[in-house]
Amino acid sequence: MRSKIFLLSLLCTLTLFAQKGVEDGSRYGKGEDSIKCLENISLYTEYVRTENYADAYSNWKAVFTECPIAQVSTYTNGVKILRWMIANSKDDALQTLYSEELMQIYDQRLKYLDQLNKIVKTPSSIAEIKGTKAYDYITYIPNFDLNRAYDMLREAVDLGKDKTEYYILGSLMSISAQKFIKDENHRDFIIQDYIDCGNYINSVIAGITDERVLEAAINTKENLDAYFINSGAADCESLQAIYAPKIEIYKDSLEYLNKVVSIMKMLKCTSSETFFQAAEYAYGISPSSESAESLGILYAKIKKDNNRALQYFEEAITMETDAFKKAQLYYTSAIFFISQSQNTKAKTYLQKSIDLNPNNGDPYIQLAQLYAGNHQWTNEPALNQSTFFLVIDKLQQAKKADPSVAEEADRLIKTYSEYTPKIEDLFMLNIKKGDKIEIKGWINESTIIR
Image (tube, rainbow, N blue to C red; front, top):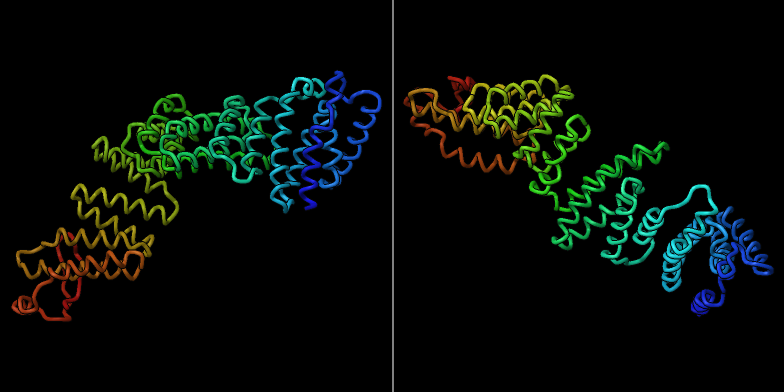
């Protein structure tokens, strides 16, 4: 009951106070009105200084209502006060009221912006105020409207462009991603949001001198990509539309080129000409293992130039210093050799991958399938079938090394077990269970008959 009475009294305050300072053209009003205004400023300012926002509220509200052009700090302090009141209110009705008043602070500041800007050294812009209002709307308004939030943020970014605060850019991408998840018709809009925010944030970051703010802005820049990718809007066609016109413009920017390569690889868009151009330009500026691998894939898949592909794969392996990454590069190269029926080379690279990372089951499985697909090494059928004992050995090793591949390994073991020789066929060759046999030819490994 008390909270409802308080709520009614607060609502009445808005209509009872006359905005006398504005009416007569003065900042504080005149006579007794100016005295009351200055007293209230003094009182609430001291409360704010000691972070006693609850006691500051009524005096601040009087200043906000009676002399709205007295100080710009009426609005900046008002935001502090109401954010605190919203966060600490236990009453839903009061929390709603405070949220509405928080929005009114921004509306009234915009209404008197010209007068307020005349009394400060550093004027505020409409974009700045609308951006902060939008940010507070999604932060402090319970169950905010997603469409309204998007419109508010988009308007702020359109006004602010490369002067927009970094967190407003991040908020726009976050809200835009949420909209796309609910409505795929938002695809064109989220693509444009991503393009604009990505363009603007570089200028924003360039102007930041505070280290903590700079770190937060850089994190936000990374989050722009994450919001776009995780929304599901970032298909290969849209990425091509976004990046293709910019590759030539940014062909000397390693940071930008690496970003394009990284995102398009992540989304498996490596067949596009844009990916190829970005990778080549990046490699030209700063040769790296990652860019060399990308070019190897491109020359193999797109250009069908196997010699250049091999050259880049070898360069990638040579430059890589991390053992696990080098193991993966050997594995990728081995897959390429398998596609070219270079079995001996493929076997060598798969074994090198295993040596560097013995806990990865994939190379064992590839080696097993490579042997299975090329099991003939002699004119004797039973001996050729014995290769499948070695195939099963590799699959068993895969399971032991990496439990995550156990299901696939078991499926292949069941399949390849059907191809092992009958014991009576081996008996005719003077071979029995438990004997060690050499699988010769390019395979050149031994296994046990069972």
